[in-house]
Length: 279
Image (cartoon, rainbow, N blue to C red; front, side, top):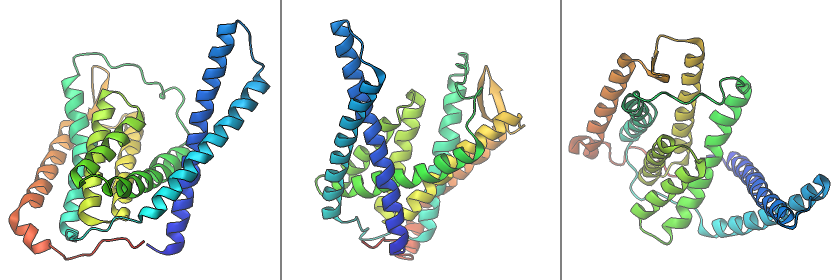
Protein backbone atom coordinates (compact mmCIF):
# COMPACT_ATOMS: atom_id res chain seq x y z
CA UNK A 1 0.00 0.00 0.00
CA UNK A 2 1.40 3.41 -0.99
CA UNK A 3 2.52 5.67 1.90
CA UNK A 4 0.16 8.53 0.92
CA UNK A 5 -2.87 6.21 0.75
CA UNK A 6 -1.91 4.63 4.08
CA UNK A 7 -1.74 8.07 5.71
CA UNK A 8 -5.11 9.10 4.28
CA UNK A 9 -6.74 5.88 5.53
CA UNK A 10 -5.08 6.22 8.92
CA UNK A 11 -6.22 9.85 9.26
CA UNK A 12 -9.78 8.91 8.26
CA UNK A 13 -9.88 6.14 10.85
CA UNK A 14 -8.46 8.41 13.56
CA UNK A 15 -10.96 11.22 12.88
CA UNK A 16 -13.99 8.91 12.81
CA UNK A 17 -12.80 7.05 15.89
CA UNK A 18 -12.28 10.34 17.72
CA UNK A 19 -15.80 11.45 16.72
CA UNK A 20 -17.27 8.19 18.07
CA UNK A 21 -15.36 8.53 21.35
CA UNK A 22 -16.43 12.16 21.76
CA UNK A 23 -20.09 11.26 21.16
CA UNK A 24 -19.80 8.36 23.60
CA UNK A 25 -18.27 10.42 26.41
CA UNK A 26 -20.64 13.33 25.72
CA UNK A 27 -23.63 11.00 26.03
CA UNK A 28 -22.29 9.55 29.30
CA UNK A 29 -21.74 13.02 30.77
CA UNK A 30 -25.21 14.16 29.64
CA UNK A 31 -26.84 11.13 31.24
CA UNK A 32 -24.96 11.75 34.48
CA UNK A 33 -25.94 15.43 34.57
CA UNK A 34 -29.61 14.64 33.87
CA UNK A 35 -29.66 11.95 36.56
CA UNK A 36 -28.08 14.31 39.09
CA UNK A 37 -30.59 17.04 38.21
CA UNK A 38 -33.55 14.65 38.53
CA UNK A 39 -32.26 13.48 41.92
CA UNK A 40 -32.25 17.07 43.16
CA UNK A 41 -35.63 17.76 41.54
CA UNK A 42 -34.23 20.48 39.28
CA UNK A 43 -33.74 20.91 35.56
CA UNK A 44 -30.61 21.94 33.64
CA UNK A 45 -31.07 24.32 30.68
CA UNK A 46 -30.25 22.68 27.36
CA UNK A 47 -27.54 25.19 26.39
CA UNK A 48 -25.70 24.57 29.66
CA UNK A 49 -26.23 20.80 29.40
CA UNK A 50 -24.86 20.57 25.87
CA UNK A 51 -22.08 23.04 26.54
CA UNK A 52 -20.70 21.28 29.62
CA UNK A 53 -21.18 17.73 28.32
CA UNK A 54 -19.72 18.64 24.92
CA UNK A 55 -16.64 20.23 26.49
CA UNK A 56 -15.97 17.34 28.87
CA UNK A 57 -16.78 14.71 26.22
CA UNK A 58 -14.48 16.33 23.67
CA UNK A 59 -11.64 16.52 26.18
CA UNK A 60 -11.99 12.91 27.30
CA UNK A 61 -12.36 11.61 23.74
CA UNK A 62 -9.30 13.52 22.55
CA UNK A 63 -7.21 12.29 25.50
CA UNK A 64 -8.16 8.64 24.97
CA UNK A 65 -7.48 8.92 21.23
CA UNK A 66 -4.09 10.57 21.84
CA UNK A 67 -3.05 7.81 24.27
CA UNK A 68 -4.21 5.11 21.85
CA UNK A 69 -2.31 6.61 18.90
CA UNK A 70 0.92 6.88 20.89
CA UNK A 71 0.56 3.29 22.10
CA UNK A 72 -0.15 1.86 18.63
CA UNK A 73 2.63 3.76 16.87
CA UNK A 74 5.22 2.27 19.23
CA UNK A 75 4.05 -1.24 18.44
CA UNK A 76 4.46 -1.15 14.66
CA UNK A 77 2.48 -3.51 12.45
CA UNK A 78 2.03 -7.27 12.28
CA UNK A 79 3.90 -9.09 9.48
CA UNK A 80 2.93 -12.63 8.59
CA UNK A 81 6.13 -14.79 8.73
CA UNK A 82 4.83 -17.45 6.30
CA UNK A 83 1.88 -16.08 4.31
CA UNK A 84 -0.40 -18.50 2.53
CA UNK A 85 -0.65 -18.42 -1.25
CA UNK A 86 -3.07 -16.37 -3.30
CA UNK A 87 -5.30 -19.37 -4.12
CA UNK A 88 -5.82 -20.29 -0.46
CA UNK A 89 -6.30 -16.64 0.48
CA UNK A 90 -9.07 -16.42 -2.14
CA UNK A 91 -10.61 -19.63 -0.80
CA UNK A 92 -10.57 -18.21 2.74
CA UNK A 93 -12.32 -15.05 1.52
CA UNK A 94 -14.98 -17.10 -0.30
CA UNK A 95 -15.50 -19.29 2.77
CA UNK A 96 -15.84 -16.22 5.01
CA UNK A 97 -18.34 -14.53 2.70
CA UNK A 98 -20.58 -17.54 2.00
CA UNK A 99 -20.61 -18.75 5.61
CA UNK A 100 -21.20 -15.42 7.32
CA UNK A 101 -23.41 -13.62 4.82
CA UNK A 102 -25.59 -16.38 3.36
CA UNK A 103 -25.36 -19.80 5.03
CA UNK A 104 -25.42 -18.83 8.73
CA UNK A 105 -28.11 -16.09 8.40
CA UNK A 106 -30.31 -18.42 6.32
CA UNK A 107 -29.93 -21.28 8.82
CA UNK A 108 -30.87 -18.88 11.61
CA UNK A 109 -33.90 -17.69 9.63
CA UNK A 110 -35.13 -21.22 8.94
CA UNK A 111 -34.61 -22.13 12.61
CA UNK A 112 -36.65 -19.14 13.85
CA UNK A 113 -39.28 -19.16 11.10
CA UNK A 114 -41.89 -20.46 13.56
CA UNK A 115 -42.00 -17.11 15.38
CA UNK A 116 -43.21 -13.91 13.70
CA UNK A 117 -40.49 -11.45 12.72
CA UNK A 118 -40.40 -8.10 14.56
CA UNK A 119 -41.29 -5.04 12.48
CA UNK A 120 -38.36 -3.43 10.69
CA UNK A 121 -37.31 -0.10 12.17
CA UNK A 122 -35.70 1.15 8.97
CA UNK A 123 -38.28 0.08 6.42
CA UNK A 124 -40.41 3.20 6.80
CA UNK A 125 -37.53 5.68 6.65
CA UNK A 126 -34.56 4.23 4.73
CA UNK A 127 -31.29 6.11 4.48
CA UNK A 128 -30.35 7.68 1.14
CA UNK A 129 -28.66 5.30 -1.28
CA UNK A 130 -25.42 7.25 -1.46
CA UNK A 131 -25.18 7.42 2.34
CA UNK A 132 -25.64 3.65 2.73
CA UNK A 133 -22.96 2.97 0.12
CA UNK A 134 -20.48 5.55 1.42
CA UNK A 135 -20.74 4.82 5.13
CA UNK A 136 -21.87 1.19 5.14
CA UNK A 137 -19.85 -0.27 2.28
CA UNK A 138 -16.75 1.97 2.12
CA UNK A 139 -15.97 3.94 5.27
CA UNK A 140 -17.17 1.47 7.93
CA UNK A 141 -15.06 -1.47 6.65
CA UNK A 142 -12.05 0.81 6.15
CA UNK A 143 -12.08 2.23 9.64
CA UNK A 144 -13.06 -0.99 11.41
CA UNK A 145 -10.30 -2.98 9.75
CA UNK A 146 -7.71 -0.30 10.50
CA UNK A 147 -8.78 -0.30 14.14
CA UNK A 148 -9.43 -4.01 14.74
CA UNK A 149 -7.25 -5.97 12.31
CA UNK A 150 -4.34 -3.50 12.30
CA UNK A 151 -4.08 -1.60 15.57
CA UNK A 152 -5.86 -3.84 18.09
CA UNK A 153 -4.47 -7.00 16.46
CA UNK A 154 -0.88 -5.70 16.71
CA UNK A 155 -1.46 -4.43 20.25
CA UNK A 156 -2.79 -7.74 21.59
CA UNK A 157 -0.30 -9.91 19.71
CA UNK A 158 2.54 -8.30 21.65
CA UNK A 159 1.01 -9.60 24.88
CA UNK A 160 -0.97 -12.78 24.21
CA UNK A 161 -0.62 -15.72 21.77
CA UNK A 162 -2.17 -15.68 18.30
CA UNK A 163 -5.31 -17.75 19.16
CA UNK A 164 -6.12 -15.40 22.05
CA UNK A 165 -5.55 -12.38 19.84
CA UNK A 166 -7.90 -13.73 17.17
CA UNK A 167 -10.66 -14.55 19.67
CA UNK A 168 -10.37 -11.32 21.67
CA UNK A 169 -10.36 -9.02 18.63
CA UNK A 170 -13.39 -10.90 17.25
CA UNK A 171 -15.22 -10.67 20.58
CA UNK A 172 -14.64 -6.91 20.89
CA UNK A 173 -15.62 -6.51 17.23
CA UNK A 174 -18.92 -8.32 17.89
CA UNK A 175 -19.67 -6.48 21.14
CA UNK A 176 -19.01 -3.04 19.68
CA UNK A 177 -21.70 -3.54 17.03
CA UNK A 178 -24.38 -4.13 19.67
CA UNK A 179 -26.63 -6.32 17.56
CA UNK A 180 -29.17 -8.96 18.59
CA UNK A 181 -28.15 -12.55 19.39
CA UNK A 182 -28.16 -13.41 15.68
CA UNK A 183 -26.11 -10.33 14.83
CA UNK A 184 -23.65 -10.97 17.66
CA UNK A 185 -22.98 -14.55 16.50
CA UNK A 186 -22.63 -13.41 12.88
CA UNK A 187 -20.24 -10.57 13.80
CA UNK A 188 -18.24 -12.89 16.05
CA UNK A 189 -17.74 -15.44 13.25
CA UNK A 190 -16.88 -12.68 10.77
CA UNK A 191 -14.40 -11.21 13.26
CA UNK A 192 -12.72 -14.58 13.83
CA UNK A 193 -12.38 -15.30 10.10
CA UNK A 194 -11.11 -11.80 9.30
CA UNK A 195 -8.54 -12.13 12.09
CA UNK A 196 -7.52 -15.53 10.69
CA UNK A 197 -7.19 -13.93 7.26
CA UNK A 198 -4.96 -11.25 8.77
CA UNK A 199 -2.90 -13.84 10.66
CA UNK A 200 -2.40 -16.08 7.63
CA UNK A 201 -1.75 -13.40 4.97
CA UNK A 202 -0.58 -10.27 6.80
CA UNK A 203 -2.64 -8.28 4.30
CA UNK A 204 -4.82 -5.51 5.67
CA UNK A 205 -5.98 -4.85 2.10
CA UNK A 206 -7.55 -8.32 1.85
CA UNK A 207 -9.32 -7.84 5.19
CA UNK A 208 -10.74 -4.50 4.05
CA UNK A 209 -11.86 -5.97 0.71
CA UNK A 210 -13.55 -8.95 2.42
CA UNK A 211 -15.31 -6.69 4.92
CA UNK A 212 -16.50 -4.44 2.09
CA UNK A 213 -17.79 -7.49 0.20
CA UNK A 214 -19.80 -8.64 3.23
CA UNK A 215 -21.32 -5.18 3.77
CA UNK A 216 -22.09 -4.87 0.06
CA UNK A 217 -24.03 -8.13 0.20
CA UNK A 218 -26.12 -6.77 3.08
CA UNK A 219 -26.85 -3.65 1.03
CA UNK A 220 -27.82 -5.70 -2.06
CA UNK A 221 -30.02 -8.00 0.05
CA UNK A 222 -31.92 -4.98 1.40
CA UNK A 223 -32.41 -3.65 -2.13
CA UNK A 224 -33.66 -7.03 -3.35
CA UNK A 225 -36.01 -7.25 -0.38
CA UNK A 226 -37.36 -3.78 -1.11
CA UNK A 227 -38.20 -4.52 -4.77
CA UNK A 228 -39.63 -7.97 -3.98
CA UNK A 229 -37.06 -9.95 -5.96
CA UNK A 230 -37.76 -13.67 -6.56
CA UNK A 231 -34.27 -14.32 -5.14
CA UNK A 232 -35.70 -13.49 -1.70
CA UNK A 233 -38.08 -15.79 0.18
CA UNK A 234 -40.34 -14.82 3.10
CA UNK A 235 -41.09 -17.17 6.01
CA UNK A 236 -43.57 -15.85 8.58
CA UNK A 237 -42.24 -12.33 8.12
CA UNK A 238 -38.57 -13.43 8.04
CA UNK A 239 -36.71 -12.74 4.81
CA UNK A 240 -33.98 -14.99 3.44
CA UNK A 241 -32.49 -16.13 0.16
CA UNK A 242 -34.47 -18.68 -1.79
CA UNK A 243 -33.41 -22.37 -1.49
CA UNK A 244 -31.49 -22.30 -4.79
CA UNK A 245 -29.21 -19.44 -3.67
CA UNK A 246 -28.74 -21.07 -0.27
CA UNK A 247 -27.81 -24.46 -1.79
CA UNK A 248 -25.32 -22.97 -4.26
CA UNK A 249 -23.73 -20.88 -1.52
CA UNK A 250 -23.46 -23.88 0.81
CA UNK A 251 -21.79 -25.93 -1.92
CA UNK A 252 -19.36 -23.09 -2.66
CA UNK A 253 -18.60 -22.78 1.05
CA UNK A 254 -17.89 -26.51 1.37
CA UNK A 255 -15.71 -26.49 -1.75
CA UNK A 256 -13.62 -23.60 -0.43
CA UNK A 257 -13.30 -25.31 2.95
CA UNK A 258 -12.12 -28.56 1.35
CA UNK A 259 -9.60 -26.59 -0.70
CA UNK A 260 -8.29 -24.89 2.45
CA UNK A 261 -7.83 -28.08 4.46
CA UNK A 262 -6.46 -30.20 1.64
CA UNK A 263 -2.78 -31.09 2.30
CA UNK A 264 -2.08 -30.99 -1.44
CA UNK A 265 -3.23 -27.40 -1.89
CA UNK A 266 -1.36 -26.36 1.27
CA UNK A 267 1.91 -27.62 -0.21
CA UNK A 268 1.32 -26.12 -3.66
CA UNK A 269 0.20 -22.68 -2.54
CA UNK A 270 2.73 -22.11 0.23
CA UNK A 271 4.77 -19.01 -0.41
CA UNK A 272 3.24 -18.20 -3.83
CA UNK A 273 2.32 -14.64 -2.94
CA UNK A 274 3.83 -12.41 -0.26
CA UNK A 275 0.94 -10.37 1.09
CA UNK A 276 2.63 -8.52 3.93
CA UNK A 277 2.12 -4.79 4.41
CA UNK A 278 5.08 -2.59 5.15
CA UNK A 279 5.22 -0.35 8.17
